[in-house]
Image 1 (tube, protein in one colour):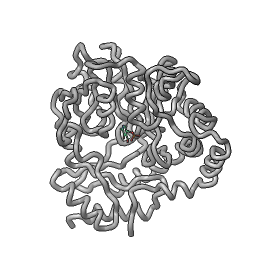
Image 2 (cartoon, protein in one colour; image 1 turned 45 degrees about the vertical axis):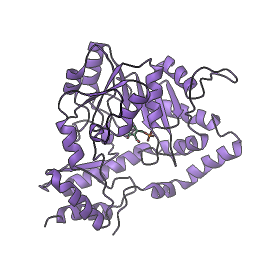
Image 3 (cartoon, helix red, strand yellow; image 1 turned 120 degrees about the horizontal axis):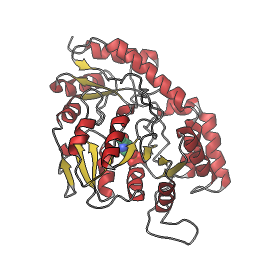
Length: 371
Ligand SMILES: Cc1ncc(COP(=O)(O)O)c(C=O)c1O
């Protein structure tokens, strides 16, 4: 049996009529950039997230640095994030001209460790970017508390956690703005690139709207800006998919529970940890080998059995070749947990349209390793 890592075409076939209808609507409208479908999707996303404003942009990386610029972050400002996030979180901080301060993750959830953040704050710190890594919310209460104590901005990088929740907080409730990515492999993904920002902050809304469109609030009027817009065709795809996101998250959670039950007690690996009361949406079902030396052989073993297991992310940001490429960066404290995560992580196939026999085949394969 072959088990794919992604189910893009299966998902498409499941709601083909809805997606095709929206694409046709855009094609027939004659308006493909900043047209009515983008406006519609932005309104739907704002309603879904419970925020006053949602702004579509070119991708999830741009969403972060555009938000940073809109919030007035500038050269020399220190921005704290964790070393085992996807590279783009740090990259966006550099693009915005700020200093990346890398701290460790929590050893069980792999999200940012608030104790490490607290120890890394200096008078130059201006912002924290927690990431809802693998689809589980970062500890936002603790982050908010630190931000209040030190008057810091908080931007949630929610590229991986749309539809996730904390135990007593929603995404967007405890921050200045939330950014997300709609690249195809995300839980809410289009057939290409896309991203968005959502916030209650009217200034962030109006600044990002200008920045994403050549600094233009209206025709022929410009200030400094960029071109980073969410195309209407993508907005149409996302509008169709947004209606299904909760049911798809539920399916991911169902497969995660099946993996959990089937892999319980396998000594050589550690299973993902869901914080009590949290709604983890399993963008990735990430296991770790107890022994880092086992990681590559286990991935190769699974691949050999037709299972497309991957790693997210096997090289932490500070371990990338050439880091930090002359950019402003500093490691504060030990990064032992992030390094352990990078050395031992394995992502098993995870998407809503998986079949029970595929999940069971993966479980059996992991269990048969070393036997
Ligand atoms: C945590 C995180 N941040 C940022 C990004 C960047 O998004 P994009 O690829 O749309 O630029 C991604 C995904 O790619 C991500 O996983």
